[in-house]
Length: 344
Ligand SMILES: Cc1cc2nc3c(=O)[nH]c(=O)nc-3n(C[C@H](O)[C@H](O)[C@H](O)COP(=O)(O)O)c2cc1C
Image (tube, rainbow, N blue to C red; front, side, top):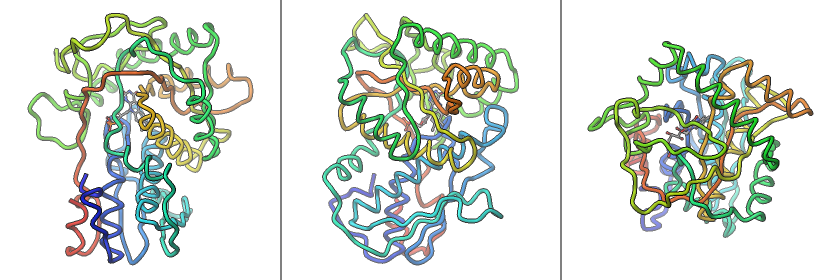
């Protein structure tokens, strides 16, 4: 990412905006749809959801699109902190414009803290993991920190501790996965975000991002079938152990359900993913069980406190070979042409 190059400092407001967006595009997004665009004006960036990139079958309400934008918002805020700016954020500032996710201004300065710098340095290193994990325990203290990360944004990271709760979540994920595989509209939509080998596309999930083989763990959480049915994907690495484990199973939840809660969930998600990355822990994501509404409701009623499930996460140790792609910041940012060098 050019945003980190040789600690050259962007000077004008437009240069800062370009630097920030060059970091923000590395946020995770559902099927790597990158459903965002940014408008810079003075010392302010407006972050919009790009409705043309919404998954109309899997995500008709736009929940995952807005969560993805929430993850980009957290990343943008972190990029501002890396420059020593204090972000002032207004989330969903205009009720008349539901696609306007946030306005981000910077006026005051304060040196970034070491944890902020560490999180910033993890932005481009972080990759979504797919499959089982190495049989190495995840430190309990880290799980506690990740729970605090979620709480910071008003979300909760609930750990499925008992064998029973892990088995129930796995079974619901398998059911959801099956429901989606049997739905031809859903399969077509997934295929449209699965570029074939050799593709030059800068969005969607490339073959370098998922394994060609299926890892069976106990309990088993099926991964998305991106290009595996066609034999695409990364070959099995000789470095991974033959025994693969499920890892720590968690559920990201919010007290409310609606655009503001989804932005919070996305911010919490990215903070969790970056913290885990700095500690050498990989994270696998499963949104199948929250895409099938009656299964999402089944999870919610199981929780007992009425919270809304937003995503299933598994944490563990992995040898990461996966790579991903992004559209350049310049293609999602409206700004003066001179500042664009910072967006490359
Ligand atoms: C809301 C949301 C839902 C996601 N759901 C899944 C999922 O079900 N399965 C999966 O493998 N990845 C899932 N992902 C991860 C994206 O596929 C991933 O972020 C994207 O392909 C970019 O790759 P990267 O995270 O390695 O940069 C999800 C990400 C977000 C933000």
